[in-house]
Structure formats: C-alpha cells, structure tokens
Figure 1 (cartoon, rainbow, N blue to C red):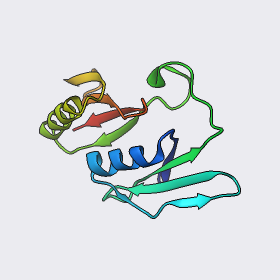
Figure 2 (cartoon, rainbow, N blue to C red; figure 1 turned 180 degrees about the vertical axis):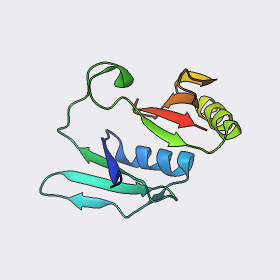
Figure 3 (cartoon, helix red, strand yellow; figure 1 turned 135 degrees about the vertical axis):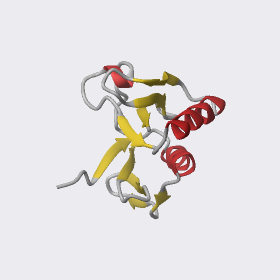
Figure 4 (cartoon, rainbow, N blue to C red; figure 1 turned 90 degrees about the horizontal axis):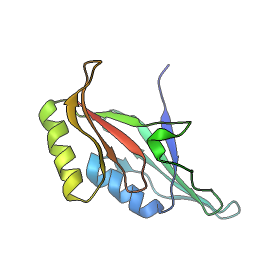
Length: 128
C-alpha cells in the first residue's frame, strides 16, 4: 500500500499550481475542468511519483483558524534529502515572502526540518 495523492482545495488554482511546480520542481498534467460541477483541478507529481491534487470550486468554504492548528490535516512533509537543501529552500521561501512557521532545526524526534506556508496558508514541513 502507498499514499496515492493528497487533495487540496484552492482559492487560486493557477497561482497554487505555479507555486508547487516552481518551488518543488513538480510536473503538472493538463487542467481538468468539469463545467457542470464548476470544478477544475491539476495533478502535480514529484519525481518520486507522489502526487498532489489541487482542486477549485467556487462554493468551497474557507477553513476557520490557522491551518496547522485546526482539526484535520496539519501539514505535508517533503523530504529534500539534506540539511543544506532544507536551509536553502527555507531561505528561498523567505525571500519570496512566504511565512516561515518554524525555522530550520533538529526536532525532539530527530528530524532536521523547517516549516513554511504555501501561498494559501497550508503548512509544509521541509525535512532533510
């Protein structure tokens, strides 16, 4: 068994697709549109094959509270492969004006990580 994909509702589908493709070097399929349901989506794929589905529908309500601090999904974790990569991507995120939730550090359970927000406030752990 494996995790096939994670689905995220988005307010700005195109901006979120551009962010993940650029920031994490993911590839994107062609946009899927279901005009009857007012639904559109992209599947974004890491080199490893893991995927994220970005979805948009105008009637989806905004979550109340800070994303990583409400019931439900708290964060996604992306393994970057090295401490240096975590530090570099954290700094690049800061330069882009993204919110840094947790500075690079070794956690109590032994991970070297930082935590950033994507443009819509979803928390992403960057791990070594």
